[in-house]
Length: 290
Image (tube, rainbow, N blue to C red; front, side, top):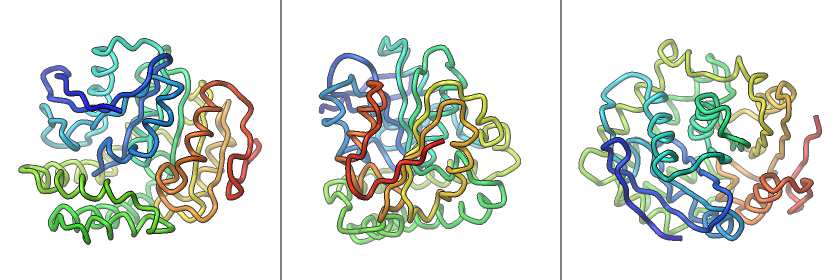
């Protein structure tokens, strides 16, 4: 994989890319960066043209004109601007956590261009408003601890709190996070985004849990059974409502299946996008038929 920088509607934007052929866009979660796909980009790049950006206000990408309120429409417009700039017409999109909600909103923004959708352990996508009120402050505090004290130990603890097995945390990711969290303006950007995300009333127009039936493209839900953020029962409810959806549950797995079980994750995504029948890639997977 390689890093590139570009300007999207005047916003400095960093992204990883690898491979050729059919485009697949990877969208990371809140308070993270494209580096969270470090175990996936090269593997998927053997089969696809993989694009993994730092989303608006994350990592080494600027915040543009976003100053307050829900960041959702600003992030989506930035993603649309990036795929347009890269000359990408039809593509599949994969999102983790809050990034999965951004991926789904990108589908609603470009329904004729997004052909497949992968949703990974996303409380943002399917939890109820009551559950969001309860759980979002914990997510905010967990990230804040690392942003206000960007040490190796603090960054490791942040991920350990949402991993089932902390020994699977990529060490090189922690070093990258230390640098990005210490950057000038990083803390302020994090707090501004999360404040907008936690405004339940203001974010209501950007929720998708009430319009899951409108997702007409094939959708693959990948979930950690022990995820402390995204409630598995909500994913089970959502997949029953999807016109063309599948759910795969990773046992002994927390909030980041793509980091905790990268080989199984990469194979599942490859099979899904290439329209091969989903098959067991590892013994800890449970395929939910709907």
